[in-house]
Image 1 (cartoon, rainbow, N blue to C red):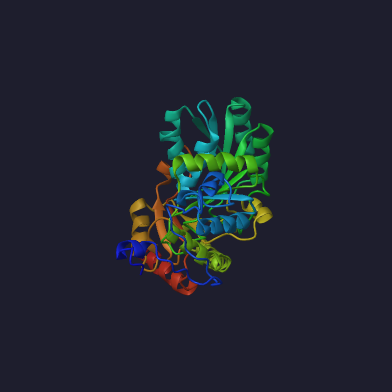
Image 2: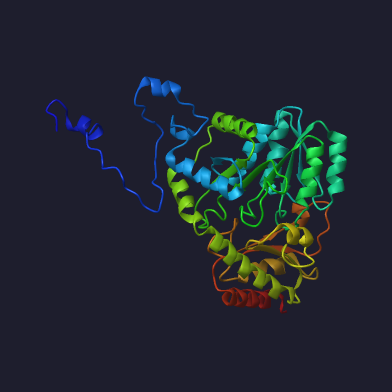
Length: 394
């Protein structure tokens, strides 16, 4: 230790540098708010908008840059920005691309919190919204004809939230393009694996990395991807102004999980389909809503555009059963836990009130959504069977 320096200073400004050349399968974790510049010229010359250097932790570190590049590759995009959650990804797209006087259109089966964002927040900023029937392109066409050119953005989801309808994405995207509107896709279910959102017509693709990319049920994160440079810059500038950032340890967890995501997706897809097919034969179940099953809404579009179907599906129970019986079914499950989200290792079940969730739509019976984890199919089937007996055998 230098005699002119105290331990307090020496511990901060220690001369030791570890040898270069360390390498490992997992990317290193870089944590920083402050980034050190070698000189003033470097500080003044660096541009935070591009991945040519580092300026401040909020604008990127080697860890977050690495995750952004891998997610962009997964989605077939050129650019990606990370945000703290899937809902934050929806909000970033809305705030970056919409202005006072604009209108946004979204499907009638949209992700609930995203719809509430339009109802409660965007409306206060002078941005209006309307909903269309995603299974009827003519419904979208009519709104575009009536509201163009105010409509600047059209959201699409594949499949729809909770009720799992799979729309004709190319047809919806083509209609939006004809009227000069951008198309934003929620690709959380597809995860960049089941289909390519850009190839089917999207301009912006977001997903909740909370789900399949994380895979552990322990991380909140979202991504927004584009192929267009100018569109990316618009998103990136809004991203900066809103101060959106993700923690290095969270980025580390997603990076660690990405390598196994195709294996996990395929395994959950296979288990979910086996259980969905078995549940079709149960007398208590009126309908299984799973895009890969013939007869499920939009199955033909799924068959044309997709190679897989995730690990998520919903059950519509026979209309003769009441909500209390359906709730008893969920409460009787032992391996399935009651909880929101999906794509984690533990199977989940959640009952939904369709009358409240889809006002004006007719869905006979009560709905339960199942997320299939990594338990054995036979064990999950036995759990479902005993719960069905307890709830509906009287």
